[in-house]
Length: 386
Figure (cartoon, rainbow, N blue to C red):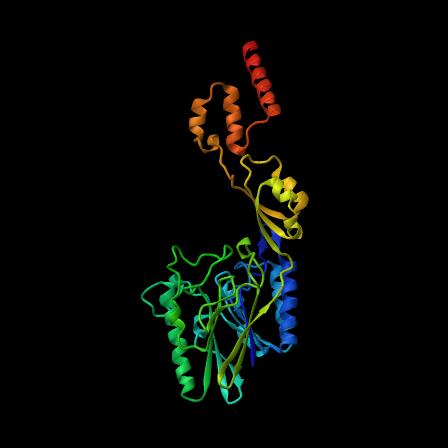
């Protein structure tokens, strides 16, 4: 039996103000091609189907169409909710959907109710642990400590109790889906913090003894142990993911258990470019030609902030979405506190020019100084005549 481990689709998300629904539709096409060409029996989605608890109509429509296409391709779906999803909304109609091959795990009372998949003489029990907000779930799970580690441990205790009972009746292998931050995972800028200061990290040894753990939440595909993996998001959702290969994992289960785990890659519609240098270097260098068709994050290192920098950059890199400034050799005046510069200004012209330099990190040009001088002279003359 082949299963496809995915997560963090984030339907409805934008990328620095650019809508991503078209890119997400192309991802779905890649997903369906994998399902058909590789003979996938079950698609696992480990949380964050949507980007927010109240998704837009277009995002809901895309997800509905995706489920229909997966089922038409012959694969079942097992889905658990993430921290971006509304568990109650996502889990609506779960009993009815299960009859159509779409199995939702969004409630605590479903923790020990696996989806059973036949492996010949054995069974694969797939458990779905939705995102567990400690403050809201600790009491119901019987945990006296409202922490991510404590509630995850309590949830896994329920899973293991059920698993032991099933194994007493026959040969059963285990797969657990969970949406959490496991210790050792590498984060990206596009994930929402589950807690402050890293206290939300769940110890990796909580998953010991399980045949495979399909994690969601972190957007970089990664292996934490032989049996614990993050599939990562299918698309990059921050420039920190510029170097990521996006996709999922194909799992092969047989009667003896987990036989193989293989990564599968899906190309993004647009590449991401993270560029740094002076404005003239970036505009002239042939090394950056590939970035002309990419979404760009650019850091300019000019000592003086160039005029109309974004406008000039977009003449070459049309999709520059993020622009920042990091002078290679900060000027002495820029390092000086603004209050000190005000105190040391010898006249009104220096005061005005100093303010202009402070707010835009570039000294006034000769033309600007002349305009300010004329304006100040005019104001002084008007005050005298009054």
